[in-house]
Length: 385
Image (cartoon, rainbow, N blue to C red; front, side, top):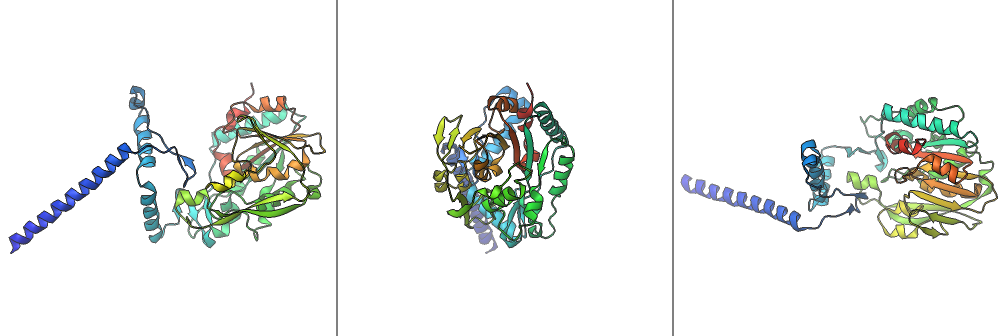
């Protein structure tokens, strides 16, 4: 009897082992024959591609690093396995995934990035040099605090994040006295009863951007920000942002994306220089049919954009920015005759080229804190020739 049971147990183990090997082989074959994806719509990012096998990449160790990233990104069924993993993590009490905190009141937020001191010193030196090299240009800086700074009461229990306002103050103290600081932190702290940030995305809402525009207009040299009145319209009801997709939290949460349109609209021309495209609206309705509905503002990020406004002004504004500026720029249109928008992450030239070419009178550096403190491209953009 015992021998029969042992034989049956061994037989069952062999079947399970063969089944397991067959599943592994199946995944291996499917991964070999399936075509690689360029991007992940769910995560709104580019996926790693198969690295080239060279002697240099082998000896330097970069091939295995890139191949590991490639396998992780292209593995068949990765989204399903990822959701299972996140589900078990949440069941175990986890409140953080891929540097995304799952805060109170269903608020997702990025952890606060600590700047690299050497990189920050180079950026400070570049900005100061720019301000001193162009004394006739009014230089302004507006750093937008990330949600974990303003919505600190929603940070998960026992989670610890850096004091971003203090990081801003330390950075500001290193700037030349001629540079004008626009204080977004104080403005947003006065409006915490409003929805200032999306729950599933790192960006601020249009409401938050408008609050800061009104509160910092004087620092930006805008005399009367109330000259233009706006009506709010819901452009999308089903936005689920990148914090949700990268963390796996709140993947079914749907949010509204609002646009603020002036009551007395005036015509203007938007030129996407690198793409050689022109349009009469700063909004891209095509983006509303994609996952990245925040791209309704300016159609997402572009290297160089010219906006000819026809406003009654002699000033030309240069905006050096990240994506947080995209929903802020519409409020600037009535106050400058021309606005030049540059994203150094995609633009190959220098700030000197832009300032001289377009006869810039005002410059605004507008970034979120996390992006500004981690961006490695600003240094090259600020380099003088």
